[in-house]
Length: 450
Image 1: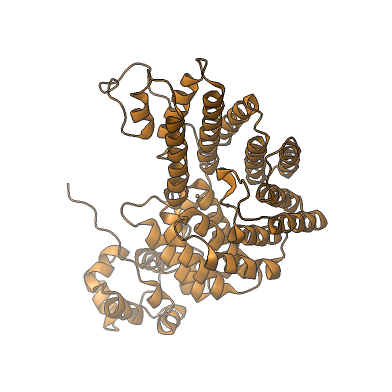
Image 2 (image 1 turned 45 degrees about the vertical axis):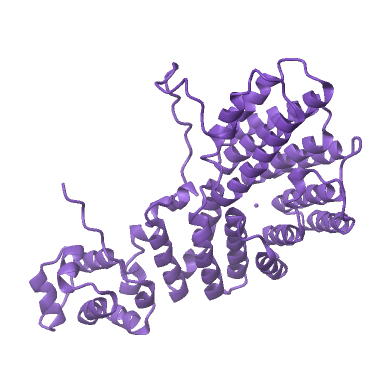
């Protein structure tokens, strides 16, 4: 069975061209069809096919011998050539809001029936499969180092591509390490295994959080807390609670977010090991919670504390590996986001813009997040063209990462753009958005992911 022909869409450069805009305004379909052929390579036969017209009718229109006045025909042309409804005096067309941006509730997939598969006896190719080959051996310091290195690699790949495909390997490694904890080990090895297991549980919780599967995320975060408590790692417990606080802001539970980050700060005060960088990160999570509650004074106070703690950082501080991401660009962008949540766009915009210039380009998810936040602040300030340009640039890293949280930021910007959909820059963004969603081999934003 032959594949259906794909509709060829007018490019954004033509949709926003003054001549096309004028032709659509007066419904001069002869000009519209000629421009479609000359500028987009859509010949009359293709126009006829896409708009459900006969080739002879299209030819008569181009020759000026026939006019198109019936509303159903005009709607078919708008839909066939992907001309935004407002340009032809129509209501917004259904395709102007991509299906991928429609909010939906995620459902946990059905679990396969129990029982070994045909390849059940074969080890996996991931690190956990390799380590499983040594299950009979006694864990050593070198094994702990290998496990920690694999976790660092998981986080790097999570930033670049999202954690959806990593999760099975991470969970497998978590269960393997927990199996090692069933036997008594030397104190240093046992302590290290608990630390590795706690980090793997937090990473698993993070991948579920990023996929907006909050129930599973909370379960793994709770498991990470229990594992860290076994070795009295209070800074790490603070880190996990801070993750749970951030999740609560995404669930529109600002009071829970504040309670969780307050508990995180309590843990950070217990015993040694909490560095200024950790305290700065926790203060910024507190700022997020206050901003979600709409408390300007408390938000500003938490931002000042984050900056004060950050200024206390010195080379050689014994920072845990899990907090090293909180560098100066991250402090800047988070400060901007906190101001942005309060509606203080004039303060937020330059901070986020500068942080994007300084940030790590390999962190695609972070760059997509921060670019959408920058676009939102520019839109709040009435800079519609700049906002659309920023959002358009953000589509490439956004489409490259499997993250439901990124989709949420994209959806929010798209909804905020609704009053301005007739502006040429917004039309161009919509066209580019649809183009990106159709790129072969990429996930749509409903599967894409501070």
